[in-house]
Length: 171
Image (cartoon, rainbow, N blue to C red; front, side):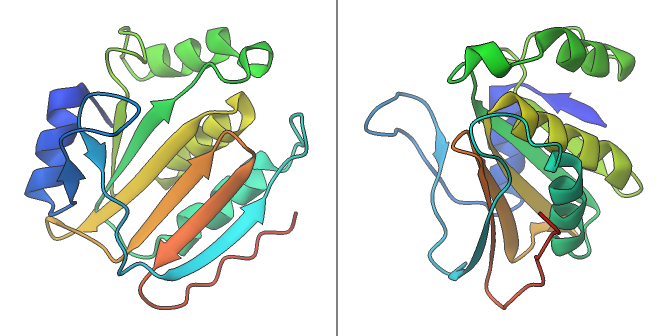
């Protein structure tokens, strides 16, 4: 696993043909463009106002729904919405165990490689448990696949794709 600063996230997206825009109306910087070709969307609510215990199961189902990938970028885009539910010591212990000591603010990208599905599942579960926003961008052969996952602090997760994808975790 590698950890990516903002500029490296943007470089990865450009190299893997993920569309970006230079600004977002409510925030400066570079942001993902919602890909309208990914019009097959399956949304699952994984909690209701607090940690549900379902987050690891939903994360595992989400990783399965990604299909084949050899790299997968998890870009955490927002945190601090539900501060009382965030477990920063656990998250930073997890990052530290993977050799990363910098803050999430400085390094919001988590690049997983083939064979790191279990680590990816753990990361997605923590994103959900902490009430953060993140986008999951798998790639295969140096190009983004036709699937994407969006996790919201509002306790839902979307699997977006061009073709229908099986995503029905037992929640």
